[in-house]
Length: 272
Image (tube, rainbow, N blue to C red; front, side, top):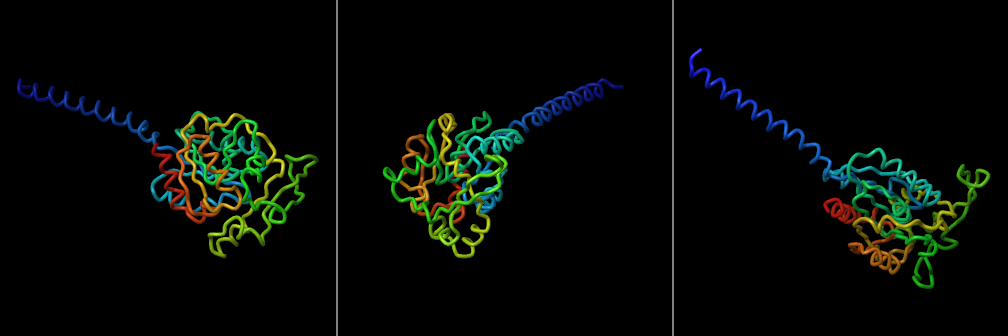
């Protein structure tokens, strides 16, 4: 073999080696980059189920986000937080945790190192020792219409309750549209009523642990026309937690009536 051929072969081998190293570095770097995009976990509140997030989830997925909608059993903050935590345990990488209404109380009980930010949508954001009913204090924050006869009670079968029974609360179907979601059309309200899940009455009296919102960046989206959690109470909680807050001219069910705007706030948290 000639000297020229030997030199050419050595140069080719060196070039291939350099290319292999470059490609290897790129492959190694790719998973780290991919994991930087958080999974968004949506937690529904009382008097609803996972379908309440359908509009928001669709918009987030259309924008390329990975979205998981967690089932909230509505049995009590500790029990429900454990159920959501089991969902989080199946997710690799960072998480943005989003709660609506009572779902905000639930996500406040979750201390998971993978949760990098939290979003509260017309939601309870308790301090340690507070319970949901306290945060609806009608003397300090009047305006909630979540009282009898709008709020109805029923005895239900419940393995988590005493002797397999529990007392649950639900919104009277005749009042649901006017009180819970006055800014949606009749057909949408009817669908929401069909998907309504009752909540254990005791869930509103169970005190919070030290809240996780004190540990991570938070966002709060106030519903200015809320007839369930008074807007003044929402503003107080948002300010107390130091959240980046915004307001929508919406009912308590802003995630249904204004899914685009709610999705935009969630995306802001995901981009943080």
